[in-house]
Image (cartoon, rainbow, N blue to C red; front, side, top):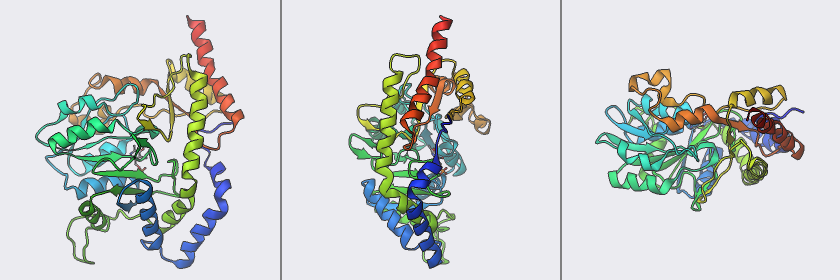
Length: 372
Ligand SMILES: Cc1ncc(COP(=O)(O)O)c(C=O)c1O
Protein backbone atom coordinates (compact mmCIF):
# COMPACT_ATOMS: atom_id res chain seq x y z
CA UNK A 1 0.00 0.00 0.00
CA UNK A 2 1.06 3.57 -0.68
CA UNK A 3 0.07 6.43 1.62
CA UNK A 4 1.36 9.83 0.53
CA UNK A 5 1.74 12.62 3.08
CA UNK A 6 -0.88 14.56 1.14
CA UNK A 7 -3.03 13.36 -1.74
CA UNK A 8 -4.13 16.43 -3.69
CA UNK A 9 -5.30 14.28 -6.60
CA UNK A 10 -7.89 12.61 -4.35
CA UNK A 11 -9.30 16.04 -3.51
CA UNK A 12 -9.18 17.15 -7.14
CA UNK A 13 -11.16 14.11 -8.32
CA UNK A 14 -13.99 15.04 -5.93
CA UNK A 15 -14.37 18.65 -7.04
CA UNK A 16 -13.04 18.51 -10.58
CA UNK A 17 -16.21 19.76 -12.28
CA UNK A 18 -16.71 22.72 -9.92
CA UNK A 19 -13.06 23.67 -10.22
CA UNK A 20 -13.01 23.48 -14.00
CA UNK A 21 -16.16 25.60 -14.28
CA UNK A 22 -14.72 28.23 -11.93
CA UNK A 23 -11.44 28.52 -13.82
CA UNK A 24 -13.17 28.52 -17.21
CA UNK A 25 -15.38 31.42 -16.11
CA UNK A 26 -12.30 33.54 -15.49
CA UNK A 27 -10.77 32.46 -18.78
CA UNK A 28 -13.94 33.42 -20.62
CA UNK A 29 -14.01 36.80 -18.87
CA UNK A 30 -10.32 37.45 -19.65
CA UNK A 31 -10.22 39.44 -16.40
CA UNK A 32 -7.19 38.08 -14.62
CA UNK A 33 -6.10 40.77 -12.17
CA UNK A 34 -8.48 41.93 -9.45
CA UNK A 35 -12.15 41.96 -10.39
CA UNK A 36 -15.27 40.35 -8.92
CA UNK A 37 -13.79 36.95 -8.02
CA UNK A 38 -11.05 38.48 -5.88
CA UNK A 39 -13.56 40.83 -4.22
CA UNK A 40 -15.97 37.95 -3.53
CA UNK A 41 -13.24 35.77 -2.03
CA UNK A 42 -12.09 38.66 0.18
CA UNK A 43 -15.63 39.11 1.44
CA UNK A 44 -16.09 35.40 2.13
CA UNK A 45 -12.74 34.99 3.92
CA UNK A 46 -13.40 38.10 6.03
CA UNK A 47 -16.81 36.68 6.99
CA UNK A 48 -15.60 33.20 7.87
CA UNK A 49 -12.72 34.69 9.92
CA UNK A 50 -14.96 37.01 11.90
CA UNK A 51 -13.16 40.06 10.48
CA UNK A 52 -14.45 43.19 8.80
CA UNK A 53 -11.82 43.35 6.05
CA UNK A 54 -9.76 41.02 3.92
CA UNK A 55 -7.09 41.92 1.40
CA UNK A 56 -5.91 39.29 -1.09
CA UNK A 57 -2.19 38.67 -1.54
CA UNK A 58 0.02 36.88 -4.04
CA UNK A 59 1.17 34.42 -1.35
CA UNK A 60 1.15 33.92 2.40
CA UNK A 61 4.65 35.36 2.42
CA UNK A 62 3.49 38.52 0.67
CA UNK A 63 0.54 38.78 3.07
CA UNK A 64 3.03 38.97 5.99
CA UNK A 65 5.35 41.29 4.08
CA UNK A 66 2.48 43.61 3.20
CA UNK A 67 1.36 43.71 6.86
CA UNK A 68 4.84 44.67 8.06
CA UNK A 69 5.20 47.32 5.34
CA UNK A 70 1.72 48.72 5.92
CA UNK A 71 2.40 48.96 9.66
CA UNK A 72 5.54 50.97 8.80
CA UNK A 73 7.91 48.46 10.40
CA UNK A 74 11.49 48.74 9.13
CA UNK A 75 15.13 49.43 9.99
CA UNK A 76 15.78 49.95 13.69
CA UNK A 77 12.66 47.98 14.69
CA UNK A 78 12.47 44.59 16.36
CA UNK A 79 9.78 41.99 15.81
CA UNK A 80 9.33 39.04 18.16
CA UNK A 81 8.50 35.64 16.68
CA UNK A 82 9.09 31.92 16.99
CA UNK A 83 12.09 30.09 15.52
CA UNK A 84 10.00 26.95 14.98
CA UNK A 85 8.12 27.93 11.84
CA UNK A 86 8.41 28.11 8.09
CA UNK A 87 11.14 30.50 6.95
CA UNK A 88 8.75 33.15 5.58
CA UNK A 89 7.63 34.32 9.03
CA UNK A 90 11.08 35.60 9.96
CA UNK A 91 12.27 36.15 6.39
CA UNK A 92 9.69 38.92 5.97
CA UNK A 93 10.83 40.65 9.17
CA UNK A 94 14.40 40.75 7.89
CA UNK A 95 13.32 41.79 4.39
CA UNK A 96 11.71 45.00 5.67
CA UNK A 97 15.00 45.75 7.46
CA UNK A 98 13.76 44.93 10.97
CA UNK A 99 15.41 42.49 13.38
CA UNK A 100 13.78 39.13 14.14
CA UNK A 101 13.89 38.34 17.85
CA UNK A 102 13.31 34.66 18.44
CA UNK A 103 11.47 33.44 21.53
CA UNK A 104 11.41 29.73 22.37
CA UNK A 105 8.34 27.53 22.02
CA UNK A 106 6.03 25.73 24.40
CA UNK A 107 7.22 22.10 24.31
CA UNK A 108 3.67 20.75 24.17
CA UNK A 109 2.06 22.89 21.44
CA UNK A 110 5.16 23.84 19.40
CA UNK A 111 3.81 27.42 19.39
CA UNK A 112 5.59 30.48 20.83
CA UNK A 113 5.71 30.34 24.64
CA UNK A 114 3.84 33.47 25.79
CA UNK A 115 5.52 33.43 29.20
CA UNK A 116 8.88 34.18 27.54
CA UNK A 117 7.76 37.09 25.36
CA UNK A 118 7.85 39.97 27.85
CA UNK A 119 11.54 39.40 28.62
CA UNK A 120 12.31 39.87 24.90
CA UNK A 121 10.53 43.24 24.64
CA UNK A 122 12.83 46.27 24.26
CA UNK A 123 12.30 49.92 23.36
CA UNK A 124 12.72 48.89 19.71
CA UNK A 125 10.02 46.22 19.70
CA UNK A 126 7.16 47.06 17.35
CA UNK A 127 5.30 43.82 16.82
CA UNK A 128 4.83 40.16 17.71
CA UNK A 129 4.20 37.51 15.04
CA UNK A 130 2.78 34.42 16.71
CA UNK A 131 2.48 31.47 14.33
CA UNK A 132 -0.49 29.11 14.56
CA UNK A 133 1.58 26.07 13.75
CA UNK A 134 0.27 22.83 12.23
CA UNK A 135 -3.37 23.98 12.53
CA UNK A 136 -3.48 25.00 16.19
CA UNK A 137 -3.64 28.64 17.29
CA UNK A 138 -1.03 30.05 19.62
CA UNK A 139 -2.05 30.93 23.19
CA UNK A 140 -3.39 34.35 22.21
CA UNK A 141 -4.69 35.83 25.50
CA UNK A 142 -1.29 36.22 27.20
CA UNK A 143 0.26 37.31 23.88
CA UNK A 144 -2.34 40.06 23.50
CA UNK A 145 -1.80 41.10 27.13
CA UNK A 146 1.92 41.74 26.48
CA UNK A 147 1.07 43.51 23.19
CA UNK A 148 -1.39 45.83 24.95
CA UNK A 149 1.05 46.57 27.77
CA UNK A 150 3.81 47.66 25.34
CA UNK A 151 1.58 48.95 22.53
CA UNK A 152 2.77 46.36 20.01
CA UNK A 153 1.07 45.21 16.81
CA UNK A 154 0.23 41.51 16.60
CA UNK A 155 0.36 39.82 13.19
CA UNK A 156 -1.07 36.32 13.40
CA UNK A 157 0.71 34.00 10.98
CA UNK A 158 -2.31 31.80 10.31
CA UNK A 159 -0.88 30.31 7.10
CA UNK A 160 -1.46 26.79 8.44
CA UNK A 161 -4.61 27.45 10.42
CA UNK A 162 -7.50 28.81 8.40
CA UNK A 163 -10.72 28.03 10.29
CA UNK A 164 -8.99 27.12 13.58
CA UNK A 165 -10.32 28.69 16.79
CA UNK A 166 -9.04 29.85 20.18
CA UNK A 167 -11.77 30.31 22.84
CA UNK A 168 -14.26 30.34 19.96
CA UNK A 169 -12.44 33.13 18.09
CA UNK A 170 -11.25 32.47 14.56
CA UNK A 171 -7.60 32.46 13.49
CA UNK A 172 -6.68 35.92 12.22
CA UNK A 173 -9.38 37.77 14.17
CA UNK A 174 -7.61 38.40 17.49
CA UNK A 175 -4.46 40.34 16.55
CA UNK A 176 -4.01 43.55 14.59
CA UNK A 177 -4.09 41.42 11.43
CA UNK A 178 -3.98 37.77 10.38
CA UNK A 179 -2.27 36.21 7.37
CA UNK A 180 -3.38 33.15 5.43
CA UNK A 181 -1.56 31.14 2.77
CA UNK A 182 -3.33 29.37 -0.08
CA UNK A 183 -0.24 27.37 -1.04
CA UNK A 184 -1.60 24.10 -2.52
CA UNK A 185 -0.72 22.02 0.57
CA UNK A 186 -2.64 24.28 2.93
CA UNK A 187 -6.13 23.31 4.13
CA UNK A 188 -7.58 25.77 1.63
CA UNK A 189 -5.10 25.37 -1.20
CA UNK A 190 -5.16 27.19 -4.50
CA UNK A 191 -4.00 26.01 -7.90
CA UNK A 192 -0.82 28.02 -7.44
CA UNK A 193 0.35 30.61 -4.94
CA UNK A 194 -2.00 32.90 -3.03
CA UNK A 195 -2.64 34.45 0.34
CA UNK A 196 -4.77 36.92 2.28
CA UNK A 197 -4.65 39.39 5.15
CA UNK A 198 -7.67 39.83 7.45
CA UNK A 199 -8.14 42.70 9.89
CA UNK A 200 -10.75 44.68 11.75
CA UNK A 201 -8.76 47.91 11.33
CA UNK A 202 -10.25 49.96 8.47
CA UNK A 203 -7.24 52.23 8.17
CA UNK A 204 -4.81 49.31 7.99
CA UNK A 205 -7.03 47.57 5.39
CA UNK A 206 -6.85 50.71 3.26
CA UNK A 207 -3.05 50.82 3.48
CA UNK A 208 -2.78 47.10 2.69
CA UNK A 209 -4.84 47.64 -0.47
CA UNK A 210 -2.66 50.51 -1.62
CA UNK A 211 0.60 48.78 -0.69
CA UNK A 212 -0.23 45.59 -2.61
CA UNK A 213 -0.58 47.64 -5.78
CA UNK A 214 2.85 49.33 -5.70
CA UNK A 215 1.62 51.91 -3.18
CA UNK A 216 -0.37 53.80 -5.79
CA UNK A 217 -3.39 55.93 -4.83
CA UNK A 218 -4.79 57.20 -7.12
CA UNK A 219 -3.41 55.48 -10.22
CA UNK A 220 0.16 56.48 -11.10
CA UNK A 221 0.48 58.53 -7.90
CA UNK A 222 2.58 56.64 -5.36
CA UNK A 223 1.86 57.22 -1.70
CA UNK A 224 4.18 54.48 -0.49
CA UNK A 225 6.88 52.29 -1.98
CA UNK A 226 4.75 49.17 -2.24
CA UNK A 227 4.97 46.04 -4.33
CA UNK A 228 2.98 43.72 -6.55
CA UNK A 229 1.33 41.59 -3.89
CA UNK A 230 -1.94 40.98 -5.76
CA UNK A 231 -3.99 37.78 -5.70
CA UNK A 232 -4.99 36.79 -9.23
CA UNK A 233 -8.53 36.06 -10.36
CA UNK A 234 -7.94 32.42 -11.36
CA UNK A 235 -6.70 31.65 -7.84
CA UNK A 236 -9.67 33.48 -6.32
CA UNK A 237 -12.12 31.52 -8.50
CA UNK A 238 -10.51 28.17 -7.63
CA UNK A 239 -10.50 29.05 -3.92
CA UNK A 240 -14.17 30.10 -4.08
CA UNK A 241 -14.97 26.68 -5.55
CA UNK A 242 -13.09 24.94 -2.74
CA UNK A 243 -14.26 27.12 0.16
CA UNK A 244 -17.69 25.44 0.67
CA UNK A 245 -15.85 22.15 1.32
CA UNK A 246 -13.33 23.53 3.81
CA UNK A 247 -15.23 22.88 7.03
CA UNK A 248 -15.98 19.30 6.05
CA UNK A 249 -12.33 18.74 5.12
CA UNK A 250 -11.18 20.13 8.47
CA UNK A 251 -13.62 17.83 10.26
CA UNK A 252 -12.23 14.83 8.36
CA UNK A 253 -8.70 15.86 9.39
CA UNK A 254 -9.87 16.05 13.03
CA UNK A 255 -11.46 12.59 12.75
CA UNK A 256 -8.22 11.14 11.39
CA UNK A 257 -6.24 12.87 14.14
CA UNK A 258 -8.57 11.55 16.86
CA UNK A 259 -8.19 8.03 15.48
CA UNK A 260 -4.40 8.27 15.55
CA UNK A 261 -4.45 9.89 19.03
CA UNK A 262 -6.30 6.92 20.44
CA UNK A 263 -4.00 4.36 18.84
CA UNK A 264 -0.78 6.13 19.83
CA UNK A 265 -1.83 6.76 23.44
CA UNK A 266 0.47 4.94 25.84
CA UNK A 267 3.11 4.18 23.19
CA UNK A 268 6.49 5.83 22.62
CA UNK A 269 4.84 7.99 19.96
CA UNK A 270 3.60 11.23 21.51
CA UNK A 271 0.51 12.55 19.69
CA UNK A 272 0.06 16.30 19.21
CA UNK A 273 -1.19 18.20 22.26
CA UNK A 274 -4.14 20.47 21.60
CA UNK A 275 -4.88 23.12 24.25
CA UNK A 276 -8.42 22.86 25.65
CA UNK A 277 -9.04 26.45 24.40
CA UNK A 278 -8.28 25.43 20.81
CA UNK A 279 -9.93 23.65 17.92
CA UNK A 280 -7.18 22.56 15.52
CA UNK A 281 -7.60 22.17 11.78
CA UNK A 282 -4.60 19.79 11.63
CA UNK A 283 -2.80 21.15 8.61
CA UNK A 284 -0.24 18.66 9.85
CA UNK A 285 -0.46 15.81 12.38
CA UNK A 286 2.89 16.07 14.09
CA UNK A 287 4.07 13.49 16.61
CA UNK A 288 7.20 13.37 18.70
CA UNK A 289 9.23 10.18 18.58
CA UNK A 290 12.56 9.02 19.93
CA UNK A 291 14.90 7.82 17.14
CA UNK A 292 12.84 9.81 14.65
CA UNK A 293 15.16 9.32 11.70
CA UNK A 294 14.93 5.54 12.07
CA UNK A 295 11.14 5.79 11.87
CA UNK A 296 11.38 8.00 8.78
CA UNK A 297 13.41 5.28 7.05
CA UNK A 298 10.97 2.59 8.12
CA UNK A 299 7.93 4.55 6.90
CA UNK A 300 9.57 5.40 3.60
CA UNK A 301 10.51 1.75 3.06
CA UNK A 302 6.83 0.92 3.55
CA UNK A 303 5.53 3.49 1.10
CA UNK A 304 4.31 5.98 3.71
CA UNK A 305 4.89 9.68 3.20
CA UNK A 306 6.10 11.68 6.18
CA UNK A 307 8.05 14.91 6.69
CA UNK A 308 10.05 16.81 9.26
CA UNK A 309 8.66 20.30 9.88
CA UNK A 310 11.16 21.78 10.69
CA UNK A 311 14.61 20.17 10.85
CA UNK A 312 16.60 23.35 11.67
CA UNK A 313 15.03 26.11 13.78
CA UNK A 314 15.36 29.56 12.23
CA UNK A 315 17.75 31.00 14.84
CA UNK A 316 20.34 28.46 13.68
CA UNK A 317 19.95 29.07 9.94
CA UNK A 318 22.96 30.32 8.03
CA UNK A 319 21.15 33.43 6.77
CA UNK A 320 20.40 34.51 10.36
CA UNK A 321 23.95 33.97 11.65
CA UNK A 322 24.34 37.75 11.88
CA UNK A 323 21.78 37.74 14.70
CA UNK A 324 24.32 35.94 16.91
CA UNK A 325 22.27 32.98 18.17
CA UNK A 326 24.09 29.73 18.95
CA UNK A 327 23.06 26.12 19.59
CA UNK A 328 21.46 25.77 23.01
CA UNK A 329 19.96 29.29 23.02
CA UNK A 330 16.41 28.08 22.34
CA UNK A 331 16.45 24.50 23.63
CA UNK A 332 12.78 23.59 23.20
CA UNK A 333 12.83 24.51 19.52
CA UNK A 334 16.08 22.65 19.00
CA UNK A 335 14.74 19.54 20.76
CA UNK A 336 11.51 19.64 18.77
CA UNK A 337 13.48 19.87 15.52
CA UNK A 338 15.11 16.53 16.38
CA UNK A 339 11.93 14.72 17.41
CA UNK A 340 8.99 15.86 15.27
CA UNK A 341 7.45 13.92 12.42
CA UNK A 342 4.36 14.75 10.35
CA UNK A 343 2.18 11.79 9.37
CA UNK A 344 -0.54 11.68 6.68
CA UNK A 345 -3.76 13.28 8.00
CA UNK A 346 -5.37 14.59 4.81
CA UNK A 347 -9.18 14.39 4.64
CA UNK A 348 -9.42 11.68 1.95
CA UNK A 349 -7.30 9.18 3.91
CA UNK A 350 -9.14 5.81 3.98
CA UNK A 351 -9.57 3.63 7.08
CA UNK A 352 -7.23 1.05 5.56
CA UNK A 353 -4.58 3.70 4.94
CA UNK A 354 -4.90 4.99 8.51
CA UNK A 355 -4.51 1.48 9.94
CA UNK A 356 -1.54 0.83 7.68
CA UNK A 357 0.17 4.01 8.98
CA UNK A 358 -0.56 3.04 12.60
CA UNK A 359 0.84 -0.44 12.10
CA UNK A 360 4.01 0.94 10.53
CA UNK A 361 4.46 3.57 13.26
CA UNK A 362 3.96 0.91 15.92
CA UNK A 363 7.16 -0.68 14.69
CA UNK A 364 8.78 1.98 16.86
CA UNK A 365 7.03 0.66 19.94
CA UNK A 366 8.15 -2.88 19.18
CA UNK A 367 11.75 -1.92 18.42
CA UNK A 368 11.77 0.34 21.49
CA UNK A 369 10.76 -2.55 23.72
CA UNK A 370 13.45 -4.72 22.15
CA UNK A 371 16.01 -2.06 23.03
CA UNK A 372 15.03 -2.05 26.71
C1 LIG B 1 3.77 29.30 8.97
C2 LIG B 1 3.86 29.78 7.56
N1 LIG B 1 4.06 31.08 7.33
C3 LIG B 1 4.13 31.57 6.08
C4 LIG B 1 4.00 30.76 4.99
C5 LIG B 1 4.16 31.35 3.62
O1 LIG B 1 3.11 31.11 2.78
P1 LIG B 1 3.33 30.99 1.19
O2 LIG B 1 4.01 29.69 0.92
O3 LIG B 1 1.93 31.05 0.65
O4 LIG B 1 4.13 32.16 0.77
C6 LIG B 1 3.78 29.39 5.17
C7 LIG B 1 3.55 28.45 4.07
O5 LIG B 1 4.30 28.02 3.30
C8 LIG B 1 3.72 28.88 6.49
O6 LIG B 1 3.55 27.58 6.72
